[in-house]
Image (tube, rainbow, N blue to C red):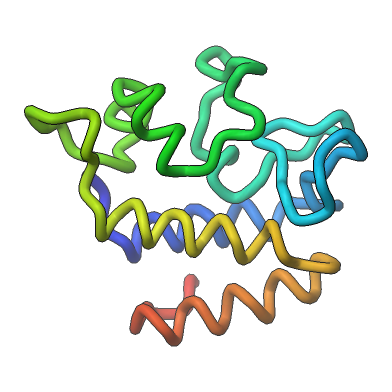
Length: 129
């Protein structure tokens, strides 16, 4: 499993490539999409390889994604292999959920980066290079 710092670095790098937030009109304002019709993917969606993405993932929070697709979450190094997939590492799921919300509640890309800076400070992470 990759460290929280590595997760943040990868999510930040993904965010830096975004031209728009990954939000579709079919979802509520504060719900991102793992893959949107504008070609973007949210911060967690950026970890999901296109060949592993399934439309059924849309609308699932990170916790539900971890329970429904445990092998994917393990394969992309967001969770470690354990004996009980129905109860993934709670601290990691909270971390990933909090990261996801920085995108979901952003009003713009600029706002998302302000929220990512708050996230970095909250979790005592280094600024990505």
